[in-house]
Image 1 (cartoon, rainbow, N blue to C red):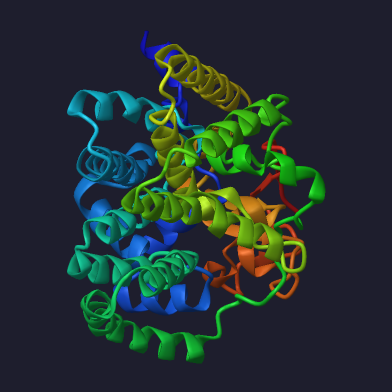
Image 2 (cartoon, rainbow, N blue to C red):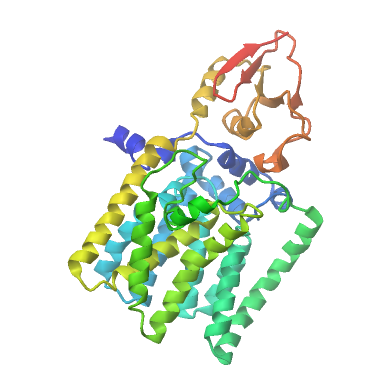
Length: 433
């Protein structure tokens, strides 16, 4: 049973090898605080997640499971806020709200990043909390959450801008003052970070690896938002068009039932959360590629909530159950394919084998920059170098900010010192001059 859980279910992601971004998270979090802040200012993400991970590591250790557990906590925190939205905002019973949480638990985008040592689960939690605060008119909570969000991921700024526009055009003057005053007071604390960014000059405008948007994928955009599908990342999933059809049909039908003023406001808020924000990023990506599902993980939460509210608009109980059943079937099918096919390279096995052979003075040469930080994580007591590479040729998005200019070699060491040369396919050889 244990073997099944950790090989055939999403728990497999919990114990799989680290990949470069997760190793980068660890390496960033272990830095002294002042170095951490400066390094993140020079990189593409702000420091909040890394600071939290630093604290987390000091308590729970630095194993893969320990580091990933922080994201798992934020996954369940997101579910809790979703429950509050269902129960307090949309007035569903506790029993029904708990039942609908199933759609979030089996959501492949949410649970994939629930087991990854990156900031995406935190992003989902903060964005969901922001929308909850707007709906409940808890504007002080909103202001402080917005400040943390700005220090977590720059894409959350899009969420805040949308919510600011929504409040501005849907509320009266007195309520706008109640909203904007605490927000302005809180975001004053962000000004020093803007100054630091101006000095550090992060690579936000430089080339990136994300592929441009295509008109072909526009038809499956709802399914991409819901599932986090990345065509170039792992495998083609054939039934995404069916998911998009279910999503669009349910939402169009449900929108006709949102007749009251409050329902219309909630519907507009959910449409912006689920569709408007990712669609804007998708359109921008025709010119400047920025659309990546994990950067918009919060929209998957909004999409699922939008589906639930529109499912509730279907009066025929059997039809409602049929639509719910199809959603569960497709999401579970996608999740199973993801568990089996979207696997991380088993580099920890490679480095475990190297640890069993390597001598005290031996070194490790990495042939591909993608594996450099992973090697530093799994071989912390050994010298790791990039082999036949130069600092200038490395793209910034491989975690270049944490690669020292002295970490490069183009010749083999002289025996008895040996070099363990790790290839991109995970194999390695031992060589010396």
